[in-house]
Image 1 (cartoon, rainbow, N blue to C red):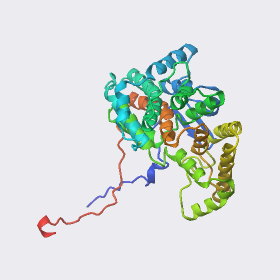
Image 2: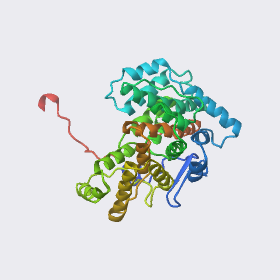
Image 3: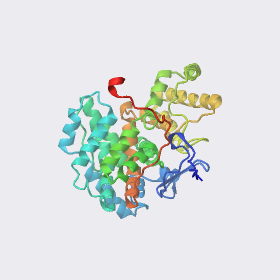
Image 4: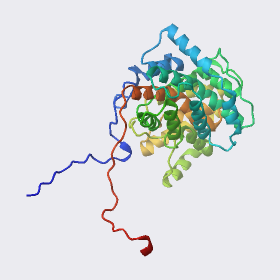
Length: 383
């Protein structure tokens, strides 16, 4: 008698949608209750009351810092901000046409090759390396962009906050209070978001017992894609192409008829709206009102796009839509929007890399084969 064992296959899913790929104590994306949680804290409270430095400490070390701990952590960031002349030379030698995310990825890989703790995967060493990269990535983004434009890098200033310092390194002018608050909030909202594509790529890489810099390099490569990190830039390109509030209806009608993707709208997880949007939108309105003129017109155009998308497609904006508009109103050039996302998300990447390494198991999913079977091999001479 022949016995057959039936093996039950898990349900197929495209893009791992709906699949829980691991456990984490870092962040919770909770669309049912319209919440985003960092280490137990509602992101709304953090965005309204905390600095990015405090949130980064929370993510990396698992708890809010005391005043003394935050001061020491901030001092570590300030110390790590200046870039080595060798990495500046590396950035200088890259062609101006190099994609900013490729420039950043290469520079982070270079930093890893020269980090004295690169091969030390202890909890303490990974926390130290993550802290350095939280400080270094904004410097790489600002210096890399300026060098690509034929401008000299602007050295960081130790008395400025993390958010203020980046804006200063980009423009050479310390930002005003509102600009600093808007940018600080955007960094907090981008800092962590569960097992998103770039974070998962980082965890997969480090699960092989690779190193933190290699994992961050993988994450930057994943974030480069338009379906992940490029949406804030794409949203502004769309708004600039539309131009006037009166052109929104016709432009969207044509774009939807051609099945174009409307950047900054929809989300794999959020179905009733991105939790982060109501935090960012009032700041964008305040910034536009401060600037006046064309800024108000651009904000009106953006709000009309949101209205039409909600009424005709029942699709709501995600955080990239107001954040991209905020960056444009802050005078930041479009090519640095996705690198800024990377600079903010470095805190989340670092936390996930540390968590993965602290209780590691190689991430190795299975696949369902859909190709042919039993094909006869034909020798090369008879093909």
